[in-house]
Image (cartoon, rainbow, N blue to C red; front, top):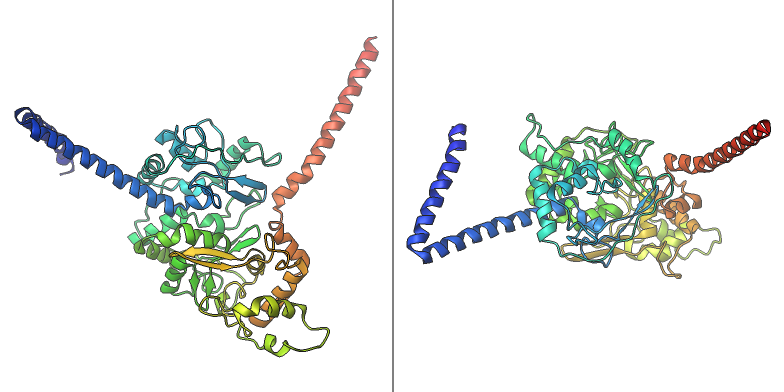
Amino acid sequence: MRYFKAWAAPMVAALCLASHLVLAQTNPAAGTAVAASANAAASSADDRMVMKGRYVATAADCAACHTASGGRPFAGGYPIQSPMGVIWSTNITPSKQYGIGNYTEAQFARAIREGVTPDGRHLYPAMPYPSYAKMTDGDVAALYRYFMAGVKPVDAASKETRLPFPFSVRSSMIMWNAIYAHSKPFTADPGKSAEYNRGDYLVNGLEHCSACHTGRTFLMGEDGSSPLGGGSLGAWYAPNISSDKAAGIGGWNEQDLYTYLSTGHVMGKAQAAGPMAEAVEHSLQYLSDSDLRAIVTYLKESKAVAGTEAPPRYDVGHASADESVLRGNAVENLDPGWKVYSGTCAACHGAHGEGTSSYPSLYHNTTTGAVRADNLIATILYGVHRTVDGKAIDMPGFGPGASFTERLSDQQVADVTNFVLTSFGRATPDVTAHTVATLRDGGPRSPLVSLAHAAIPVGGLIVIVLVVVLSRIRRTRKGQES
């Protein structure tokens, strides 16, 4: 039957074309109608392709990085903080001068999957091409069609990325790609359900969840030994989202996971902030019901990566009367963290940390119940900002960008963090002003970056020594020759 269809399809098409030509010759009006119908069909098919590409772009979360705050869609200029320095996202509108308007589909596919532009320039993996390499040919084609026909060109240059040496040498990515960027287009696991396979494709391909939620090796590649087991993101920490029941999301029920992905908030459990809030705002909330269910299915069946959390993050802490008891107490040596909490936080999160319908409780909360305090500190510094279903959810930050009257010092942030953890969360009150300063400055420095910075002066010294030695050798030879 397969061979019959392969042979019959062009024969049927030829017969139909012949009949249309005869009809057009005998009845010009009918011929015009046929042509109009064919054009309409082609236009409709193209529209469907563009719409599919729009959905793929949404699932791939392209807008989050390629649209600057207040900027035009996909025009670039968004600063991506990396351990090596700021990487500025590029203009990916169909502008022929500043964007990707001159890309062929094959060149576009290579940039998406391999991280190489038409002129041979290597992209940094802040553009998650190791994950996008899994994209199917159909999705790549649809994405290309969307950017060429569904996005308005913006004739404006985005800021140029200028990382310090040696990271400025883009050709070094050739070796990195050989080690870490070896993904191939997705193939379904025949032993799994269609829903699981779709979830696998979304989680590890389009949504590139592992790019944040998997730890990094010394060379900044994903650590394949603990997929989705959690990873540092500068000031933020992307938690374990494997199926482990304590450290990951294995203890969540399916509806809670679905609600979190689509809204960024589950009452009495978790709320999205930082990069996760961006993922919810720009991508996850727009996915179809079936795709969200597929992601949930995959995560619930993913490899469990154990951690040190016990009990689970969302099941830690309780309401506390500390704030109420201490309020109005005239003792001089009162907890300095309580002073900050009472004056800055209690109005929204409650005297007992119970929260409201708009503000989360501070107990049974994955942020305060985590072993690491990174996300609590980052939330205090940078706030929470996401828009879901047209509704803005905002908590002001008290760090960079805050007004002088609202700004908190590193010590104040450390104090209130320790108070919140002791009163409502996992009692690990060991946050220092230095810890806060490190996160305020973008997070702990990567060992690779530290080594590179240390090697630069050493390398310079070696060069100077070699120059001196060669100079002396040359002088000695000249003296001997004379």
